[in-house]
Length: 181
Image (cartoon, rainbow, N blue to C red; front, side, top):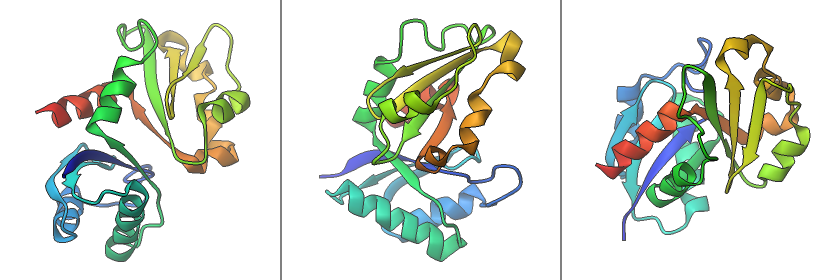
């Protein structure tokens, strides 16, 4: 039975590093035997279907594919269509509903990292940042008017940063919409 996934590739086409053309990425996924391959924006979002029943195996296969084809040593957060639907549905009340006022992101966690691990190490700026635990994600919001005062960027200096990838709320909901088509 085929399952539809989104692969969230960490660190692709960010800051001029790890440059990969999305057409090349999609072609490599197809050549690897994955079906219904599509990409969304150039930050490493690949939608596809697979008959592989074991997610850990599939994740390792995709990481090996990225290493072999593009020389990338990166991790992949795989989320099924059902999981992404749940992530969007379980967002805190009002999350992402006022994008002019609040910038919202989803931190997609990789095992063994848990939402509790992330929340324990996040340093939030009162009156600017908010964070909430979800299932294998952390929802992070910050006031748009004070975004330069947010402490979200500090997460990049923490060791746990290697075990997560971040997508904006707009990208997250758009990926779900693409999976639902």
